[in-house]
Image (cartoon, rainbow, N blue to C red; front, top):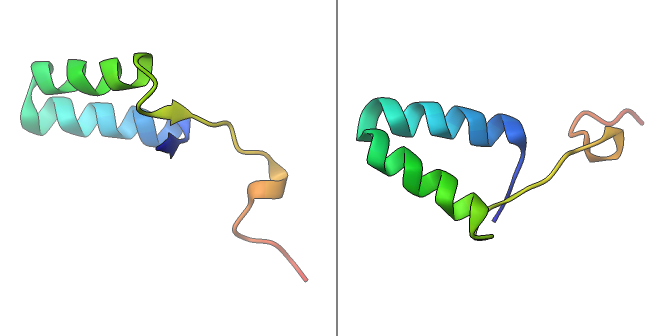
Amino acid sequence: MLVTPYVLTECCYLVGKYLGAEAEVNLVESVVGGDLVQVFPDARDSLWRSG
């Protein structure tokens, strides 16, 4: 799954808050293991394209 750093940051916060530290560690480990891949969007990825 591809996720932006913003999505990953928010997910870590919410998982840690509602499911606990162990679940948050599992989420981070899924990034380290390659199950989740961070992507860095640029202007071409904008949903708000004009024209």
